[in-house]
Length: 59
Image (cartoon, rainbow, N blue to C red):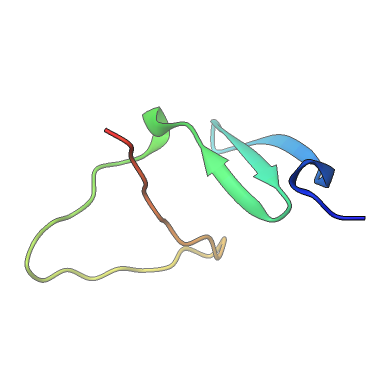
């Protein structure tokens, strides 16, 4: 049996921010997303949590 609605949804808080875990995919409200550095040269560090950041918008 397969399908998109067969995954558990788990809400959790970390450092005062609420997240949604859906089958290993983690989501957060856009209010908790910090601005992206758009400089020509920048350094990105993956935090100890191991969570990378991907930002989407439909605006």
